[in-house]
Image (tube, rainbow, N blue to C red):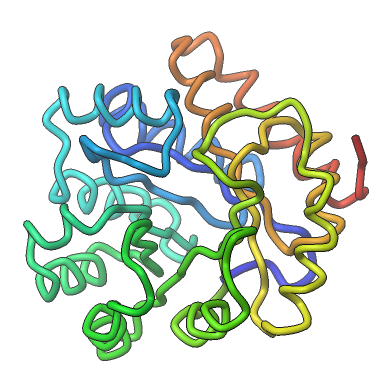
Length: 257
């Protein structure tokens, strides 16, 4: 799923934010600018891992009537234009349970999703979730963080396919002034235990930060900054394009801040 020869940028978009049409439009913009994969957020009313920007986007999307069926529609529309582009669904457990786990997995595959990440599903309780995904060859991605124990990391690596998502800092998503000073050491420890590619997210919002993180990670996830720009309206599209393009350039140069 991740580019084997270049550092990968994974932007986050919220389905239905600022509207369904704009979430589709900006998804295509990000693909055109060189993103390797796309995280498509499923709006949820109690997103415990998300900071104020993504919480606001989820609230607006829900107010627009966005639900899982809408999310699958967005994935289908993206895939019509870019059938081979990887899409990762970023969701919480409650929407899945309400939709039904089997139905969720089946609908995700039919829509064209390549992987799903359920933020608040602990790996210790994910046997059925993983089994259903394996039955239809749908990738599963799990989160590890600075507080993950070595024992738990093994379980997360066992249940993750395609890549492992590392949370760069304790806390919620959002822009941060600096990249964690301990990130290099933490990722070195992850590399010693996990053979999967590693994507890093939470707190990364500038090309310089993406360049720094990419010295240690295979992929960088940028979410809140893109959503903040999308909130400004169509006139911010050049800024969205520039953030994606410059982040990729910085990552492949290994820029530092």
